[in-house]
Length: 234
Ligand SMILES: [Fe+2]
Ligand SMILES: [Fe+2]
Image (cartoon, rainbow, N blue to C red; front, side, top):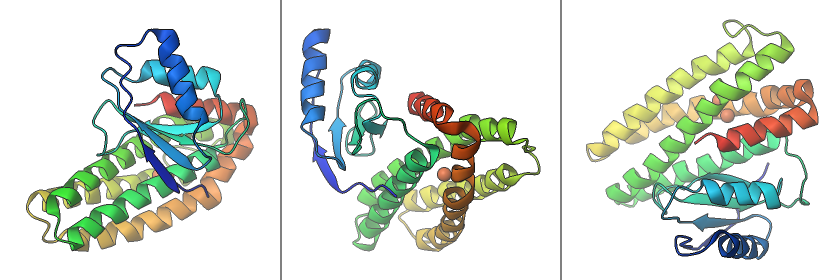
C-alpha cells in the first residue's frame, strides 16, 4: 500500500501569472518533489487548470485530492508517485492510497480531541468526512457500476451490494461524530469505535477482493482511464 510519508506545504498563487509561467512554475515545483511527498497548492481560482497541466505533462506520476483543512476549499494536494511519466495506475493502488490518506486524517482528528483541542479535532474530522464522502461517491458512481457491468454482478445482490450497505452505516457514523464534535466532543469516541470496526473490515474487503477483481475485469488500460475519471470527480 502507498502511504504519505513527507508533506511539503507550499502556497502558490497563480492569479498573476500567464499560462506559460504558471505551467512552468507548477512543473518545476512538482519535479522537485521526492516520491512519496505531498505538495499542497493553494489557488485563488478553481484548480482545474493546474490539474489539466499535470495530467497532460506528468501523466501517471501523481495522485491528487481536494485539500483538507490545511488549505481551504480551492486547494489541492498533489502526491508524487514513484513512477515514470505516462505510466498507468490501477484501481487497487489508487484507492488503497486514498484509504491510507483518510485513515491518517481520522487518527489526527482524534489525537487532537484527546489533547483537548476540540476546534482542531472538528476541523480535521471535517476534512476526513469530506474525503471519505468523496471516496464513497466515486466508488458508487464510477467504480461499482463499471465492475457490475463487466463482471455481471447485480447492484442489489453481488459484492458491491455489500459494500453499498456498509457505506450507509459509514455515512451514519460520520454524521454522528460530526454532531458530537459540534457539541463539544462527548460521545464521539464511542461512535468512532463503531466506525473503525466497520471501516477496517470494509477496506480490507475492498483491498483484498473488490479492487483486485476490478483491476482484473477492467484490464490495465480501462483501469487507468477509470482512475483518471475518479480524479476529475470533485
Ligand atoms: Fe467503500
Ligand atoms: Fe474504498
